[in-house]
Each structure stands twice: as C-alpha cells, then as structure tokens.
Length: 459
Image 1 (cartoon, helix red, strand yellow):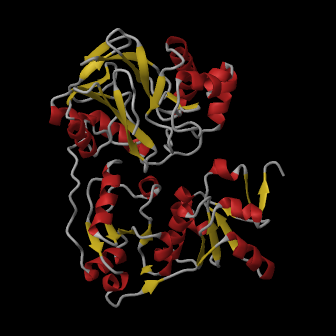
Image 2 (cartoon, helix red, strand yellow; image 1 turned 90 degrees about the vertical axis):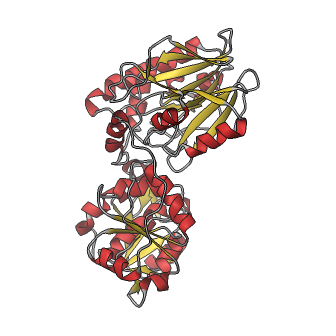
C-alpha cells in the first residue's frame, strides 16, 4: 500500500504470483484504476473501503502476461474503459491518444505514447487540477532500474521496439519533474521485464541515475537489453488474443470434488492431476502419476508454462481454501476450467492405491555423495542463469523443456537442482512419473558454490 500526499492517494495492488502491480488512485471521492488483474473482487473491495466512485479503468497496453480484469470491472461499475485508440480490439472502449486528458474528480490523467514494450503502449501522467504532474503510471515502459522486454510482439519487431523503448524512457525523463513518482505494472518478478528490476519505489530522478535507458547511449542500451532476453512462459502467446477479444466474466467457483477411484482413473488416462502441497510433502508421499506444483509465488508461472493447454486439469489440495487460491491464480492467465478438485489427507485420497516418494537433499550432501560414487546432476535453470555458471559435470535442461527432452536424461539416479528448489521440485515430479530415480536438491544455488561444486563464467 502506498500514499500520495497531494491530490491523490495511490493504492498498490500486488499480484506476487505474476510479478505485477495494479493501482487504484483516488482524490477521496473519485477513483481511477490502472491495469487491473482478472480477479476484480480485490479492486471492488478497495473501492468500498475508500467509499469512492470509479470513473475510469485505464490500460497501459494489451497485456501478454495476464488476462485483464479491466473490461469486466468497467462493465460492473459503469466506469469508462480506456485503451489506446490504435489497438485492434473486439469491444467498445474509450479510445485515447497522445496528449488526451481524462478528468477524474480533482485528478487528471494525461496520456503519453510510450512505445517499446508494445507499439501502442501508453503511460498516464497523474496531474492535479492545474496540470502539475504528481505521478506516472508506466505499465511496461519505465520500470524500476530497467524497462519492459521488447520481444513479445514478434522477433521481427524486436530491434525497432527496443529503440522505441529507449526513446520513450528518455522522453518520460525529459517531460516530467525529477520528483514525479513512477508506478510501473511490470518489474516485480514478471517475465515482461527485460532484466530484473531494482527496489520497491522510484521517481523520475531515481531513474535518471539508475536506468540503463537513461545512463547508456542508444546502442549500448539496445545491446544490453537484447542480451538479457531469454525464454518467457509459453502461455504468453495465448493471453494477448484473449485480451483483444474481451475476456469472459471471471468465475472463481470450484468444481465438484473427485473421489479416489475417479482420481486414479484420471491419472491412468494421462490427465493433468496437480498436487498443490509443499514440495517436501509431495516428495515424502504422492499419488503415482500426479505432478507436484507447490502453491507458492512461482506456482502459476510454471504451471502455466508447462501445462498442455486445454487438457483436463484436476487439483489436489490440503483444503478447499488452498484449491480456491490456486483457482484464483489460474484464472489470471486464462485457465478458467477445472475438471475437478480433490481435498484431504494423501492416504485417504490414495484409498489403497500406490503412493510414491523420493529423497530430498542439499548441495552439501551432494558433495559428500559425489566423493563416494558417480551420480547424475541435472540443472533445470534457464539458459541465462546457466550461462553464468553451473555445477561441474552437470546436465542442463531448462524446466520448461523437460517434458520434450526426457529421453536425453539418463535412466539412473538423478539429482535435480535449480536456484531455490521450486523448479527442481517440478522437474522431479515429472521425472518421477517418467519414471526416473530422482533426488530433489531443495537448496539455494549459493550453497552449491559454498560446497565447492560449481564453475563460473569468470572461472
């Protein structure tokens, strides 16, 4: 939560699972919302808390990483739905262009064309009634210490968009006072960020000191941004078409519960049955053929990345509340339908069926085991992470490629690691199904260096 002390109070709405932020700004009577996520009940609760009228819902761009809640929020509240006039969409909205001003009580929102993340991207300057800037909502343009990635529209446009991004950030810095607060949508873990963002708050003055677009010349910026681009979640390709068509109203209700017999049938049929429990609990015991995607901040990104779109999906949870939280995460990326849910203690769900387990260890133990015998080590981090170094004599297969490259992984004991344990746990559950004999390294990558197991690009 954040506050702006002059005309508008700005509330930050965090969506940690996707690394994004939405915003509600109000002058005490009237409000505007910027880039809302699909589950708009969170926004409506804030409107009730502040007891304000929603005048406009503003989109900075057609999003690639989440399904917008903007259209539904506007329809439910009677607010204007604001989007760049040049965007090709299948619904009515309030079209805006460079320089257009939207009044909202004592606030004004001025649109600035800031292409780069997308061609028609807009930023919105929050001004007081006199037209003096107080803040700027920058979407996927100016982020904290970085900028939005420029390769989501298509590789053939990446170079041009990168140069447009450079010009857009320079323009924002030139037009706005140094004390202007910056409120980006991306940059808090989202793959829409070109490189990792820095800090939790920023101003135009801060960015002039720290942002590569404002500290490097154009070609240096272009080279730096392009070198930092790596794979992004596969579901991104599905999101923009949903947002252009206009998302269906959100439904957060849960499917009926599935009994153990039906659960086993679904697993036997090769359907996606996903266990939401803690990764160490999954390793200790799980239904044969189920997949482990611990419900944490990485859940929706990696389930969405690996999921076979359109396949029946059943969730196993410790409680209905846990499954409901997972459903909320999934609708944000357009996975609206669940084939069913199963809730309860594992052995009750197994109902006499087979339960499997595999060991959990750490890098210190790996070093000791390696001194005694040969074991196969699998690194499932991204290519850009691996380029900086890895565990010596390890095999590298990014987690999002595991399903297609299982045959490359030897049929022997496999110790699996990433940078923190989450992606390794997903890979372990997939390989356990394959089946392979797996050991989950539930440890931070720094511990691998401390155990003397690594090589690095610096030597």
